[in-house]
Length: 380
Ligand code: KIV
Ligand code: ZN
Image (cartoon, rainbow, N blue to C red; front, side, top):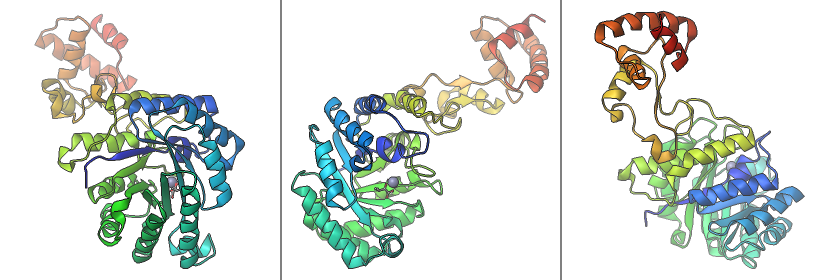
């Protein structure tokens, strides 16, 4: 098995399903072009049968973006597939993503059918789609909770029918990382035609484990990861693209490679936050406002002595602004002295001790001390 991991971005499909995050076609094209620049391998551009607007977006993205594969989602139904085939007509490289529920809970309580019938319907959908498009991805919805032997049977049947990628979604974000990793390993070890397809991981974040589960899947043989910018997606979201990409980059021991240009991670995060009106929390890994901000005295002192004391990622590697030292009542003399020096003040130790006391009094009242506040302090 090679070490190349294909990055499948679903910001414009699973991400765009989020209430309030809908984009118009022009905005979607802007995001798709940014995803192309970022180096993703596949863009899931939409679910064409869901609305005329989504259909049109898949058409226009297919025209505007040429490097990544453009993928369209369908249920395991001929009408959905017909719509996806039509929407993808201009795509230089195209994929249909079809599938059906695989857990007993979905089979009994959502689809109200039987295990045998879902395999039949899934296989028929792959065969039908294959008449029009060579690259077919099949999703086994709710695979995280499916009976593992049945799941293996389903995966084998859809690969035999022509699926080139099989998506194993943890649709409800239920599994633990070692359980999800073991599921992928079971499929790799037990599905006899598994070498004819790529196994993909699509994880949701209901328990905050989407990134950990995706990495566990990759460590156990999945070679495609499905993710979104800023981790947006249904409910608590999906695996965050910036997190998985940086985990693979920061941990060479994983021996996994992507085509992602990590310097584009911060710019695309900002673009998606703005267009979707969905700001990330300040402490969001990689792209949050505080991801490279140091505020406690102990950390600031260590950071100023040697950046790697407190940073495992160089902000420039993700296209972010430089690291920042935030001055609050928790800051120490090292950070204060450093900032005063940056502002052009030369200050000896006794004077720094004196200014520091005034600084603490001010910081207790003002939460965060800005440069203007420091100038005020220095004029006392
Ligand atoms: O979470 C999920 O199961 C999905 C499928 C449609 C792939 O988004
Ligand atoms: Zn999903």
